[in-house]
Length: 455
Image (cartoon, rainbow, N blue to C red; front, side, top):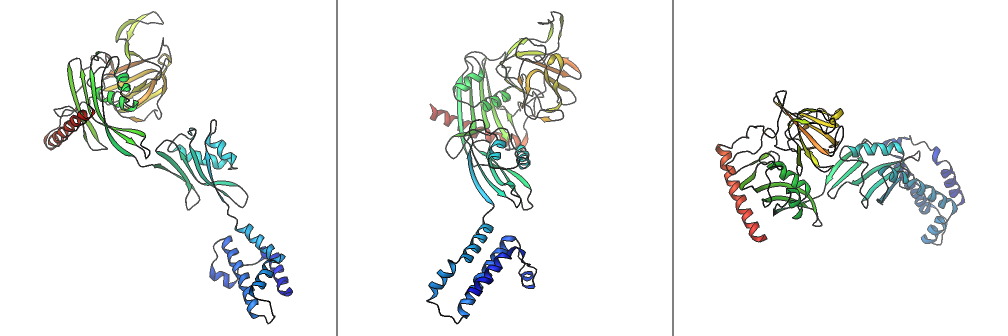
């Protein structure tokens, strides 16, 4: 037995110097280092078993042989050596985000190197802001330690909202890639209505409508109604819209508006959504689109503070032409693109402060000045859709207070946006009109049923 253990000892001491380029190992085609260790371990066990059954020496029995051998110092040494080699380089972590933590500070605590962190941030940036991690959310990630003891992230899940997670992981080539994962949501139709006592926004908030739904509602009616001049106390609205809920029954996000009604200064307007989920518009009861080249007002909840025309400038004191219309509103109020088009400028415009200029077509161009800041993604060359938020009310440049200075330019000439006659939208005809009539009747019945239940 001593000769055998001596051979085992020599084998252990020379293990790292073994040459695996033998004919037998070439045939096996061992793929990685751990596979080689498994092979060697099995070889040792095989040698032990062969030795046991081939020897003519007498032992007290199988159990004694195994216990004596397994307790031997050399065997334990080999066991510790192999355990160390088989130790997994991967570690799993669940980290609860607390106040003041960033993605960089969190991963640094787990020894992830700075270059790796920056690569992860670049992947997240494709889908969300890597600097914003919600307090109380949980980061789930797996780290890997390589031969040089450097720690990298093999996989990480970052929750950026109630329904969206960003997954960053290494592909088969070892490169970091990312995906946006949206959890399952459940759609429900809601109907809201109220009397307007001061403003549409305030009245809508009273019936717990979400701000994004209110903004879309104002956008739809922005073609038909001037919210600064037309709204009267006692006017009313009704809206049928989609709301999406998460698995816990909590509101996750607003969906599309299916039907919108307003009674404004004795005039009743019914608007219906018609089209596919990706391409739809809003039409009145006669199948006429409400969309025009430009909205009447690109802001909701503001008051007219200065009209188009000659005026005495409030700061310089000189009488000069005021080429736009001013709408006073609280700082931070969203400003919408009054029409679809291409951003020509999004920069500092001197006395106009932060301003955006949009070319809508060969005829119409609009300007929005004194902004506090620009909306995300608004820059030169960017395409914008009608009603899209492009910035927020501020008081930058030469200004006496927070307001929007709005200009409309037609064929290179400044015009009064409030008296401008805009071309009407298309009218549904033929088969489209028939399909619209079916959808309109269905919607009217649904609205009637939901109102009855609510009352």
